[in-house]
Length: 70
Image (cartoon, rainbow, N blue to C red; front, side):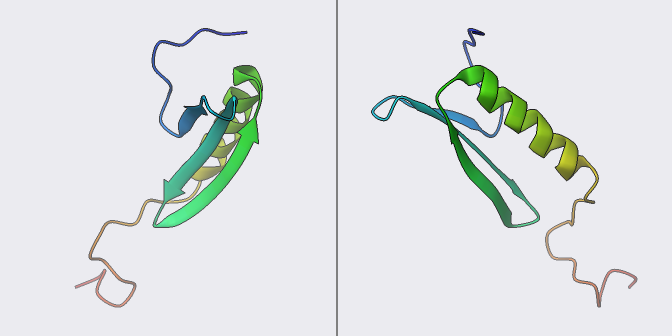
């Protein structure tokens, strides 16, 4: 089991429920939450989600499909 002094973005520990939560936001869309008992399982899911989100282009605030080209 890995020991982390600080969790990566998208990973939290809920001590009262003794579980790790994985949740990411991308383009105002929530991905998750997923819950795991071990940090190793949570880190695997986080890596999977980050890989998936890397392929989706980031939309800047204030830009809509109608005014992007202006």
